[in-house]
Length: 369
Ligand code: SAM
Ligand code: SF4
Ligand code: SF4
Image 1 (cartoon, rainbow, N blue to C red):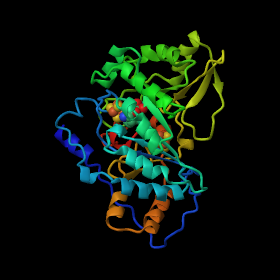
Image 2 (image 1 turned 135 degrees about the vertical axis):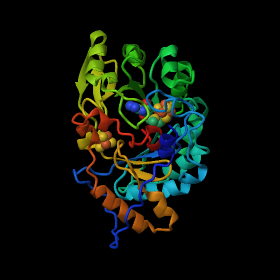
Image 3 (image 1 turned 30 degrees about the vertical axis):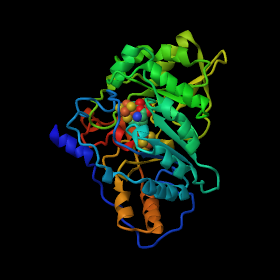
Image 4 (image 1 turned 60 degrees about the vertical axis):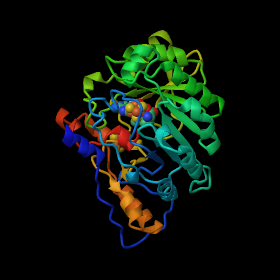
């Protein structure tokens, strides 16, 4: 166990090579599969006050677990500088995540710095954050004031016993619901609610969750339980395919499919036939969407991951801290994205159980969801 803990707290990856010929970004970068660089997810902390069984199980994330020291974290200035370089390459949407992003001290300050940035075409950045909502009621107003546009909230059940079994720290459903309402009141909507469905744990909550959020201002999305990281003991037979989620809801409240808002939208949309709103399903396991994946991820300590299932990242912090210029880092980024060929989820089904559960995959709490 000790070996595993050290491995996860120090996810080393090499610093990218800085090419000799520097380029000016055009905002039109594509990878090997012709996918543009459109979204950046930034993990601002590897810590969390929940111990969700599918993400930070207590058996691993216990008192012995070594989180990153503060000096290892990217500073707000470093994050903003990197964000700017990504934006010049075409990023229009930034999502702050973690761990629990609201645990990062003075997160509002970072939000204010990022909110100043404009996309390559001069539009305001789509700046959003994913949270477990434990601190949302308290912080919603200051997040909004700092320039955050929207939040996505994770909630895995309406029944307290089931929810507490999922978060494993006795956090109550009502406090999450209160956070959602306060965030909506201060203008952090439209709010999406993400429910990870783990078969045998919370799948009995699919229909009650749909019932509860139907007709509300909130868009509920069901996420297939994924084999991220190496600590959650993932098994394929605990995945409830989205088709089954839709079937169960439709049996009581008929649903029909809706066209996607834009290419690369991760959630497939379904609306209630009686016009009372819609739900989304994110089928990362049963129907991979790698072909449209335009997402880069920046870990808490500044490693760039071009796929959620990557086994190592590219150490951008090393470039920052060795005094590289914007042009040098930007050119290195362009080369990394052009070389990207990741499509793990598309290949997953053809891999053996051993490969799928490989011990080197990075944890969701480190890389950000
Ligand atoms: N702590 C915040 C939260 O829970 O919203 C942000 C970070 S969390 C890692 C981001 C998202 O990843 C959450 O919606 C969470 O449910 C999802 N997630 C974590 N582990 C997952 C897994 N194994 N499969 C599917 N989704 C997962
Ligand atoms: Fe924390 Fe979010 Fe992971 Fe749950 S899913 S343990 S709230 S980081
Ligand atoms: Fe994107 Fe990797 Fe997920 Fe495929 S497996 S959708 S490439 S993050």
